[in-house]
Length: 148
Image (tube, rainbow, N blue to C red; front, top):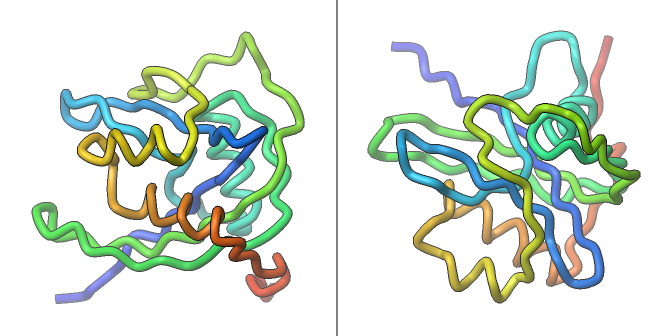
């Protein structure tokens, strides 16, 4: 058996104490997540975070820092995720943009509001990324290099 973790990216965007989240359908259950998704062939991890933020929230994301690299095993699905989370700024919205299939809406919540919905998180990585952001964790973007 070949073990292959799923490489994902996430965009953590904070504005005036509120964080951008998406509410998405997870097999019929609405859950909260950062704009996040899989790393696609031919793109850098930073480019993937920009694309995912736009596709899932219609937000134009400008990554400023690597927030962290997270590993998590979804035991029920027998899938291991390797998440590269980036934090940065919002450079506007594309209001008329159609969101990805399964995305119910984009919304802003404080860290406390997110904590109050802990039972509705896509994974424990959602809150962990917010907690790390609030704690001031930031790493230079050049920690993630793509060699061509």
